[in-house]
Length: 149
Image (cartoon, rainbow, N blue to C red; front, side):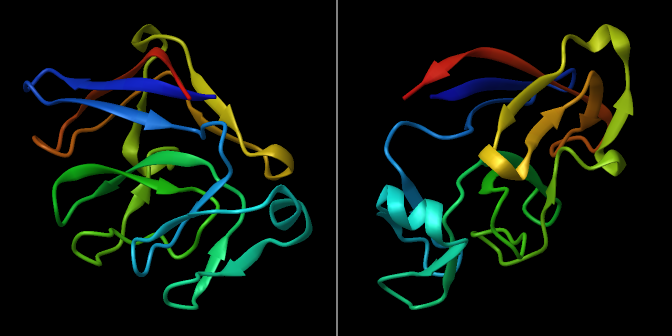
């Protein structure tokens, strides 16, 4: 089950994002943007499998997480287990929001939000204010809103 998170900034920027993973084991190719179903055995036995469309390696672990594309000036959702971290729209480099360079610690910002990647560890958004893709200020906050399947 995945989480629904609201990203909101004082400048008026708002975005609802879907993170983690749902019930169906899926892989997403960052190269050709194809999503395809993977068998449970594939996800357990292998770290990467070839994309059936383009043949490039795709991570079998799925952990959708928010990242910032400064070139597009938007929050994008990428698989935290898949490298390289590139924007599927412009091809530019993206940075996951768990990087300290995108955070300003703030205990009053609300509780930390985290979700798992099985044996690889957790993706965590600590109590902080984050860099807003719209205004560029460290005033963006993430808030857990619900769940998705």
